[in-house]
Image (cartoon, rainbow, N blue to C red; front, side, top):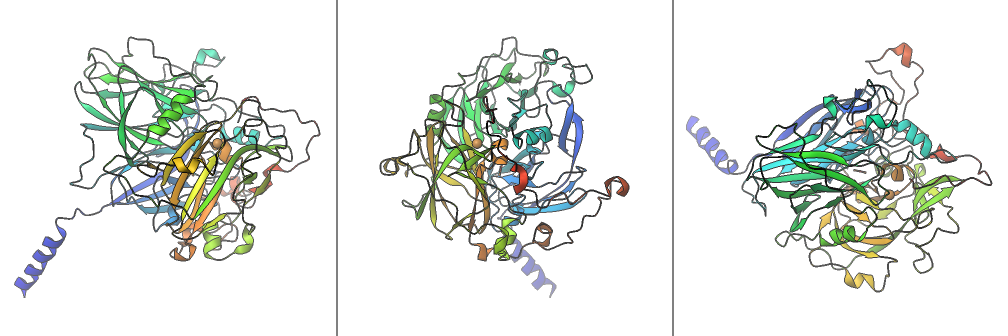
Length: 614
Ligand code: C2O
Ligand code: CU
């Protein structure tokens, strides 16, 4: 008997031993406000376990990540999105408030659980919307690094692996910014005060009359971020952007960068001096520490695409054993010309799938949807729209509404499939900038192939077209092509790259240009597709896709409890960590006000408050 058991165990061991076991990676996070001085200016920052950026999630392909997050923000709702993770089989863990879940209320704990099914560089960030949205830009973000399976060889070699996230940083609170966006006349916060590299930047405190307590350039919290490198070694540097507004370029003084990965996909390598990066994108670059090791070298980031009134973001490469605080002896190199779109378009076009990792794509699509991107007015209030519809979220998250067939909780009138390609003048301010709002969604046939053509246009400012980084939840798409000017539906598809298109989850739409994408609607759920600029999404620049809703498994009750979503009790109970007396009157923070932002009469001669924003 014993021998038999032993044999059985041995047999089991032989079967399972060669397969590295997928692990569970557990995290416990507490989200709260703290005073911090990331760019030397002291303000409230949303932190995870006291840090911003938050802890890096490290996992291996196939692992399960479990994050238990407690909302200690006192008054704000919370949801955290795992940007780039497709949530196959777990659409309720996507962390999109209003789309895939009800928000996590102050005092509550929510458990996210999902599989990281593909190696690569990903991100996480707050994705609460509603009135106070914008927690991402007040510091709630971090990196997810998923390593390749054992015995897998990547198409490039390196000795060390490092991650940085680039962000832009405002001194005004997100409340002030959001209030401005939804005011008439419109109040635009303007350009960010600084750029942060891995949460560190430098504001020129003497440029404003601030006390040393408010702004202090000798505060170690704002000493520039340094990556220590060993001379002669090769580094994989994972660079990501989670800016609220800015398109960026990134440089390493004296070092070329070889781009090898984009949004979790291997790239046919190419070398750059400036890496252009848009909010929501991730890249891996290979660098070699092969310069004169007696000094350190600047790491810089600059705003492109908008008049750069924000000072350059600075960090440096610290050649070991030089002192990690010793600034490079040179003047930091200046960035590229801010309004030269050509090199940015050229980089977009240069990104192709690595020849050994091409994911073959369907050569035709079942449906092509054109999304005209415009800035608009609705009752005098500024909005952003696709096809003249500015997106709003319903009270009941779509995933729940769809699964439970609550058809009355959002508009059932299908949103527009396109616009008048021929007659819309993308180069001029629209004569009629008026748009409408809707919470209708695009329902896609399960497993069908869908093409999206993003078309840019002039904003409401003369001679101005913005860059919009579009991000798709739940999928990667193939990037079929980019073009300048108006998309020609007869001519342009003939030039689509069907040979080696890169797959991505975030892609820029360049000024006055178009971008074409293809994806398979093969992931049951409800998925947001939106501009990753905080203010643009806040003002309606997004859509939702649904596919295969009948194939979605049973929804966890933890995502419910708002709108008509049933689930746990809807009544607000004061969070345990704050006095009932103080908070007694607090309403349920979520609930019911998404659409009412922009009511009010139109002043007949409303001045145009837009200079260069949003
Ligand atoms: Cu990184 Cu819906 O966002
Ligand atoms: Cu945008």
